[in-house]
Image (tube, rainbow, N blue to C red):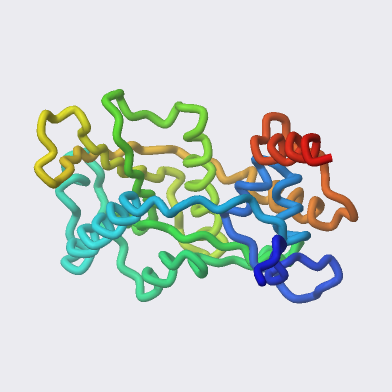
Length: 247
């Protein structure tokens, strides 16, 4: 019989073994320390959601397309269109860096976290510096920007990847790129296919916050009791409301 709590991959403050912590779990901590504690210490995770299968399909096709040019050591036409002087970076571990449960890893010794995140792509500039690249699928008639409040998580995602690559001694540029694939839903006819436009947005990142966030996440997990919920956390709000009705 399935239980409501998870028993694997729980954080034990007394353990000397490195604890594997993903980028998404650090993002959970930044959003709500209580949810993070309940998930990693108590095995009480947030309810899962169905996979975004269309986004996954776009991601796979984008990787395949850029890999075509990677094998030829040439820039993609989109990179030329947006004036980016780089080519897709070739490395024998690229597929490993892209794996969801492996990714690029770095041991953070002060916390003993084996921190990791799966990157979409990496481009190499003419001087050998690397640009972290993230693919994003969307569908909007509005101008695409990175200034929406919910897109701040995109920026943190980029900065974490930069931090991880730097911890593995790669020369990483502060400038990363978001490749947006925008589905057109304004067409008169569907015809069994979606039509997309593509755009690259540069982002000058700063990963200086990552170290402190890892330390704070570790301190959170070492507590004896869960911390307070973040203001406005939907999951904690739901749990509180449900307890009030059930009691």
